[in-house]
Image (tube, rainbow, N blue to C red; front, side):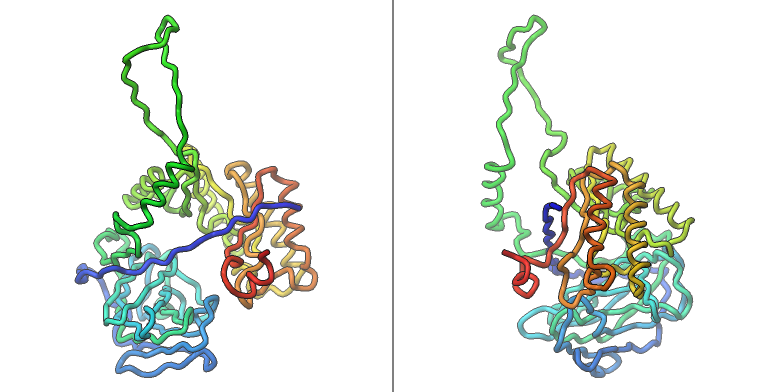
Amino acid sequence: MQALLFASVSAVLSFAQLQALEIPSGGSGINDGQPLQASLRPEVGRAEALGAGKRITVTRPDATKPYLAQCKAPLLGMVATSERVLVLIKARGIDAESQGMVQVKLQLNEAPYTAFGASVDLTLSDEWSELPVVFVANADIPSGKGAVAILCGKRAQTIEIESVRVLKYPATLDLAALPRIQRSYPGREPDAPWRKAALDRIEQHRKADLALTLTGADGKPLANTAVKLRLSQHEFGFGTCVSSHRIAGQTADDQQYRDLVQSLFSIVVFENNLKDSSWKPEVGVARRALLNAELDSAFTWLAGQHIAVRGHYLMQVARPPGLAGMDDAAAVRERILNSVRERLAFVQDRVCEWDVINHPIAWSNADLLNKHTGLEDIDREVFKLGRSLTKLPFFVNENQIFRPGPQHDDTFT
């Protein structure tokens, strides 16, 4: 059994500047008068009152469980699907050596803490700033059941949160009207030193000579003839992850999203659309049909732009969210294998390759499925099943072995 290892690399953006916030009219407050709530396990750190706010100190961080130290702002009103939610967080990080880092989520305020949009990472400076975070609700949030959660447990740090204001706006509001953080990163400057070395490597590795023989109708070479060549697409795979909902969407923002994908990239991977958790039976028949229609539309558009698609993933060894709470090994095995069959049958040859196994090593304290009785060979079973159903190239995707720690020590040679 052979597969290539596909290592992923992530970058952290920090905010470079925050202009004076311009809050559009028409919003309604949905957490007015609600005190902030802090929740920390004693072994993780401590929370202290800070006037109406909170000071949260994390002494034992866990990057895989940032929710072990958090601050919440409960919501009073309901939020309808597609309504815009603007969160204004006045906070700072008071560590002397580094900036604070938190993750902001719009979610249920009770189990199972369902998220109503993608989480947003924030970097906090040591100066008080009111930072805007924007969500578009992906489902109805019942009145009094929602919350904005600020997860602080990813790193050892002290965070001070003075206030959290939450406003909702109609679904018709242009998202561009809402304030955003201007994000940047060190080295983004046009004259950053790394650019010259990179350009030199591009000349060496990413370019090749092109020789043309131009002939006239008589077959003889043409002389003194102007020739204009235009590169229509890179052979090298400049890639990114995309949302099928955005690719298939009909708003002005969706069109801008497609324009950027078409102009910048030659290969993509869907963020979550082909993962097993997005295909769990609980999604339901009607919802599955809608999601599949979006995927069909996205695949069609990408093919029309000659943009290749990677398949990510068939199975994750670290227990994925869709298998949370399932203890019956036979039921877990059946669900995994059925899901592999369903997704391969749907996708067919519309991807150029598959991450057949995701996170076989994973993070510290991950719940690895193949460590459970009855599932010792589940990753091998998925590999064999996948190979019987498609001849596309297979990769094993892991990003945890190239950093100091037990994952590197135990697996990298």
